[in-house]
Length: 114
Length: 115
Image (cartoon, rainbow over all chains, first blue to last red; front, side, top):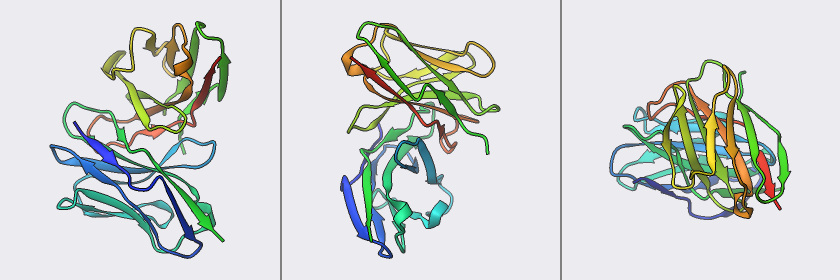
């Protein structure tokens, strides 16, 4: 069975600083990995996904993530935080085959300080 | 841009009552899902649905839950006799296909409070 661990339930950064949100996965087969963002009182919006093509994936709003098989990681980064990035971020994994469900991490609440 | 919609946005009900949560998936999508998020906890998979039948369900999705696509556009989740522990945000999602790389598009959620 697959699983996802997000280190740090809360992360605070200053506006303009680097954002790094950590995600490690566990999967016995090659995974597909996703980052979703949830703004207050809204649903989950896809930021980016890894689908076994390029290991460095670029998403919306300047975010990117790098798939590192050796480290079983898929950390999310953004070079310069903006106030509007404040939200909760979820990493999710899905494996190929019959399983269609996404397995989510516990989420990381990002606070951006002025 | 097409989006998944859900109604109502909030629902308050008494324990033991039946509730129906409604979703309108993206129109050309074929696969539909329900997830829930209890306050402060992970988003959890409940059920997936394709071709008018359940494809997968989790341990959470017991006999109290059912899903239905009553017409060509709606997808519903029914909880037959609500319990306090059913209080959560319920998300509907849809996807065009079922390969692992397919994106699931989520609705804004229905916040259910069981008193």
